[in-house]
Image (cartoon, rainbow, N blue to C red; front, side, top):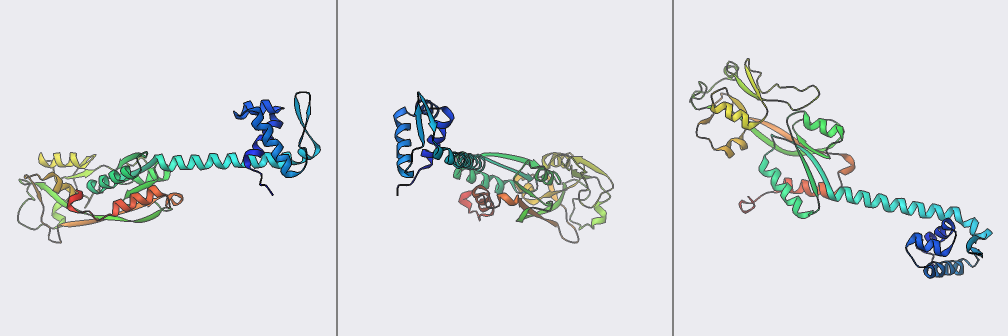
Length: 294
């Protein structure tokens, strides 16, 4: 038995809705003969007449009337499915939004984004640079699909992205910049440059140690300028300090070790965890890079 195609049912409905073969052809951008031939094949397959031509109008037979509701439902569902499939494909293929805390090593981030852009040439990438609680807010607001930060709200698929070492640094002429090892309590007596929490809801500019005197800035670059002008000391990521290579900046020696380590979590919306784009980004972010890839 010859199978009836979705296109034949679409033409059947179009003839009913438009009142004739010629009008259906105009609506579907097909010739009248194409519509007429398709309806005849449909009638041949079902073994019964579907239309009677009255004047210039095509009128449903009783049997044709009995098929109309199901035919409309079939065509409507098919159109809806096609629309959803195209919309989802377009969204995943062309848009990728992420929020990344400034603590995350920028070399690793940009390597991953560059590789992602190469694999998906049509991808529109939207990057939000965040500090502390702002990443979680953007996730909760639905602004971003992926977030990387030290603190992630509940309800997301998470994994460890990396760990970041921070060290206390100051100008080489700062009182703390000596060969002597300092207790953490000594640092509290000096002004600390603290990075401002970019969150809009209940931000916390706690910094490390809770120094008695603080100077709050917006990013690492401002903190570094403050250090160079002897405005205080700061806890900065080791990767950032190495990138700057400033001769007048010194790591402070502490009696319980020089470093503090922060775990950075990668969070993904559950419904996007299996996305090809997200999987590729995670793969590139986790890739072991060779010197040639730098």
